[in-house]
Image (tube, rainbow, N blue to C red; front, side, top):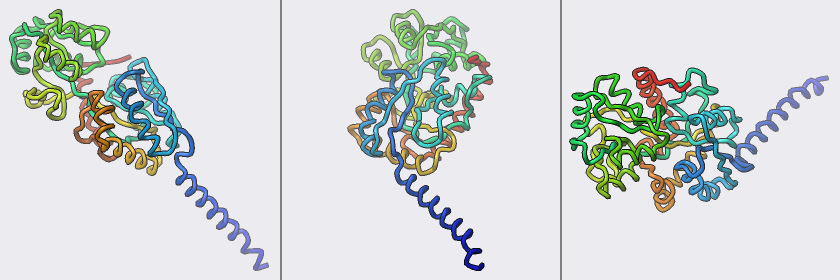
Length: 328
C-alpha cells in the first residue's frame, strides 16, 4: 500500500520535470521557423532598412526573415496586425511616431492601444529641416516666427496633411499664439517640397537629406533642423531647441512585438539589432543611408525604448489636445 501511495507524487514530479525540459528545449530552439517582420510602404525608409539588414539578422538568428508590407489608413493596419499577433516571437513590426504613438492619441476608436506592444529597440531618427524660399526675409527660425506672428496668415506653409509633423507644428503655433501661417495642404511630402522650391509657398518641413540637396543648389534656405542633436548632413544648421523652439515632433524607427513577448525573445532581438547597428558598413549603407540618425535611445535597451515611448505619448497627447487633431 505504501508503495502505491507514492506513485501519484512520483508521476506528478516526472510530468513537471518533462514539462520544464520541453520548455527549456523550446526556449533554446527559438527561432525554429522563419520570422515575419511587418513594416509600412514598399520602398519606404523602413522597408529599405529591413531588407538591407535582413541578411545580417538572418545570419544572427539562423532563420529566414520575411518582410511584409502593410499600408494604408495612417498605418493603422500595420499597428493592428502587430498588436494582434501571437506573442511567440515569430511576428514583429517596425514602430514609428505615427503607428505607435500619434494614432493612439488622435483616434477615438482604434483596434489597438499603447500597451499592446512590446518595445525591443529604437534604431534611429529621421531628421528633417524647416526650409524657406530665398525670397523670405528671415535668416533664423525666430525671425520667421516673428514675421508670421506680426502678419497673421501672410506667409504660406506647405504641409502634406494633418497627421504630419509640419502640419502639427503650424496648428500648434497658431493655437498657442507663437506664429500664424496659412496652412496649404498638399497630397504628399514631395509636393510640399516642390512648392517651397518653386516659391508657391514660403516654408515647409522636409526630410533632412533632400532638404539639404536643395539648400546646396541654392533653391531654399534651411533655418533649423528637427533633431536630437547636430547632423553631419546639415553642418552649422541649429536644431529647433538651439533656435529657441523647445518642441520636437520627430519621426523615428524602432522594432516592436506584440504585448507579452517573452523576455528571452526581446533580449535576443535587441542583441541582434545592436550587432547590426555596431557594424559600421551595414549601418552606414542601410540605416544611415536611408536618413536615420543615431542619438539616444538609438541602439539602447528595451527599457530605454519603453521610457522613450512613454515620453512620446505624453508629448503627442499634449499636442493633440492643443490642436484638436482627430484622425477619425
